[in-house]
Length: 358
Image (cartoon, rainbow, N blue to C red; front, side):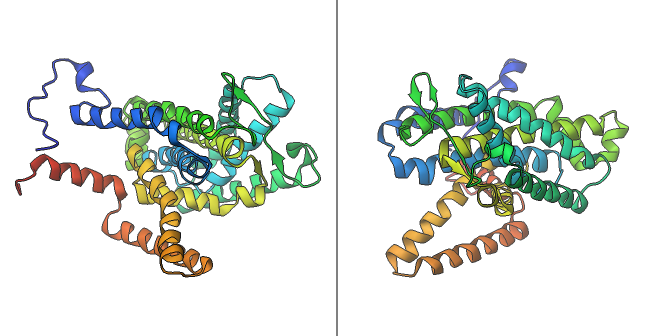
C-alpha cells in the first residue's frame, strides 16, 4: 500500500529508463538530498563531521569503487588501501607542487592518476582470476604502501615520513586544514559522493555496465557474444580505481589532515572496505551506502552500549565489535549473500502488499 506502483504508467522510453522510475523512490531520494544539503549543514559540529558524516561519505565512495570492480565485474581486489594511498599522495603532491591549482581539479586529477595505476595493476586480470587475482592485488597493496613509506619524494623528504594537508579554499570557503568549518568540509565531500553515485548508477545501467556483468557471470560466454574481456576488465579497474583514488584524496585532505602510509592505508583499510561491500551487498549502488553506514555506526553503537551503558572497558568493547563484525559477515554470506541491499528490496516488497499478507 505504501509502495504501490499501480497507475504509474510510462509513455516513453525515457520515462521507463529513469534512474528512479517509481514516484515513491523519487520522493525518498529527494527528501534525503534536501535533508543532506539543506538541513544537516546548519546543525553539524566537529564530532558529527569527523566521527560520522565525513567518515561515512569517504567510505561510501571507496566502497562504491570496489563494488564496481568486484560486485559488477567480478574481479576480486584486496588492494583498496593501496589505491586510496595513491589518491592521497597524488593530491598531496599536486597541492604542494602546484599550490595555485583549484582544489576540485586536484581531487579529480588524483582520481585520474589512481585510475592509471589501477589499470597497470589490473593487467594480471587478463590472465588470472579469483584467488590468484586477489593475491596479485594484495601484492599491489603491499608494494604501494612500501613505496610511499620508503621513497622520500612522495612525502617531500619530511623527517617524520608523514604528509600534512595544507589549507585550501573552494569558492571562498576553507575545506582543508584545522581552520576549516565542519559544514564546508561535509558539503565538499557530499557533493563529490552525490555526483559520482549518480554517475555510477548511470554507468552500470548502460552498455559498459552490462559488459561488466556479462564478464562477471561467465567471461567465456561474454567473449563469444562479442564482448572484449580486455576492454571490460581494464575499464572496470580504471573506473574503480578512479573512485577509490578520489575517496583516498578526500580521506587524507578533508577528513584526516595528516597521514602515514603504514597506519592510514594498511591492509586493514582494504579489508574494511571489502567488509562494507559484503555487508551492503555486491552489485548494488545502494548497498555501498548501507554497508558504509552500518560499518561506521557499529563501533559508535557498541561503545555507547558497552562502555557508556554497561561500564565495560574500551578494549573489551573493541574486541566485541570485531567478534560481532566477523559473526555478521559469516551470517550474511550464509543467509543473505546479497547483503543489506537485498533486505531493503524485501522490505519494499512487503510495503507493496501491506496490510495484506499477499
